[in-house]
Length: 266
Image (tube, rainbow, N blue to C red; front, side, top):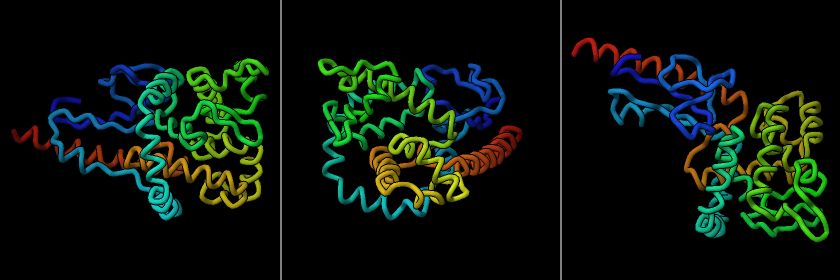
C-alpha cells in the first residue's frame, strides 16, 4: 500500500509493539499486506484525515443488550465510578498478562463483574479472589490453595490463572460471550444450552442458561460500555464479529479507492 492509502490493521491485543499476528499466529510487520485477525480494531491512516477515521463503522450493541446495559449503568453508576477510581494499578497488571497470553485486554472488566476488583472476595460457594476461582479450578491452573496460603488472593498470580482459563475456554467455544458464560457456570452448562437451543449464539441460547449466568454476561457487557464507551470483540457473538469484519473490510476498500483517486489527481 502506497502513501495516501488507508490500511485496516485488525490488531490482536497482544501487540505491545508495532508488529501484529496474522491468522496463523505468526508475527508480521504492519506494512505486510495480508488478512489479519483482530481483537481490537485500529485504523492506521497514511495521508487520510481524522474524518476518515471518525466515519469508520462502529461496533453496534446487540438490541437485546441495550435496555439492560442502559439500566445497569444508571443504577450502578456510583459503584462503577468507585471501582474505576481504583482500577489503574489493577488494569496495568491485567493488560500485561492478557497481552502475554494473546487475549483481548477488555476482558479486564470480567474481574470488575466478578469481585469489583476485591482480591479478598469470597463467595458462598467458595470462589475466592478478584477472579473468583474455585479451589479445584485454581489448583488445575497451578495456583497454591491450602488452609494457610491461598494464591487466589494474589492479584498477579490469579490473573495469570484466569488468563489461562479464558484462553482455554476460547479455544473450546471461539466466542467471547460464551467464554464469559462458561467462566461463570462452567462449560457443561453452556454446552447443554447449545444443545437445547440448537444455537451457539448467546442471545438465542441465553434462556437455557442459569439466570445468574445470563445476568453475568450482560453485566460484563454493561461494565465494558461504562468503562470504554463502546463495544469490542468481547461484547459480540462470533456471528457479529464476522459480520462486522465484512462491514469494516468494505469500508476500508472504499476508502482505499477514494484515497487512491485523490492521490492520482494530485
